[in-house]
Length: 340
Image (cartoon, rainbow, N blue to C red; front, side, top):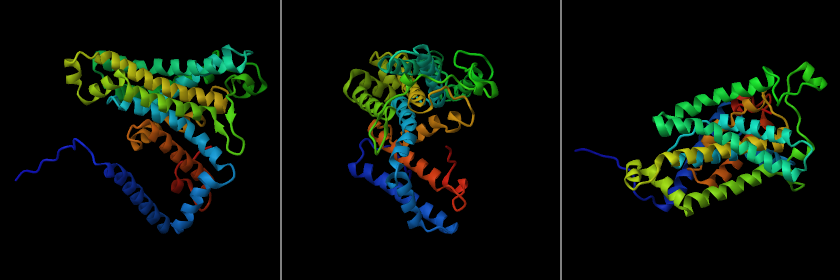
């Protein structure tokens, strides 16, 4: 007797809830075993994690700060993965987003915020999209595996970022201030280039609100337009798409550019919301691995843009809690590599 496993054509609604709930239950159970083995009370630890991430004074603000870059890189990965394009280059595209955004902010120094901020957004998106088009072109015209090319380009982008600040006298490098004479740093942007925040008790970065808008835009694009329909057909059956006359190469370029633009927008948010200078320090922006974590966010959200918002928020809370709890009783090996 032969047994053959086939993929379901339709999935029951209860399964979409049961799988994540069961996964979370199993995860919390395994974590409880680890906590007990290391001499910690699981219930008390879970309570401390919740308070540190969401309930303590200022916790929600810091959670939103941590969640903002994960939101953009998660949406970038989800936008590409929906067409079975595995863009692993969100990290490098985010770096290029910071470069393009900082260039726009420095170029328009002295201009008011309503001019500088949109230019920073456009600069970040254009730079991220341009970097994503490199593996897209190779995939579309030479059938090169985009996983390898986009992944390797992350390291190239990191080296370029280092070169601009540490190994050259580029437009982005500060060569006049006293601190720059001691250690290479990027030029500080003007006050008009600092993105505004929303709220007082809970401060919401502008980038997080823009990310929610991007999630809505992606959903509309993929669920309500011809472009989205063709992307789904090409992702599910490239042969059928070619038979129907769909321009596969154009879609590859367009989807990868969209994905890179979203990651580049995350880089612009890093400049405008938080850093206000081009950060090339290996212990700074490059140490967080936002692009790689974004892939996890997209996978957990099952490439649903609205779910990406929720997952990014939850993972941002976990990162915040890990940073808060880390100490003698909770070493970094137990809470994860928490930085900042």
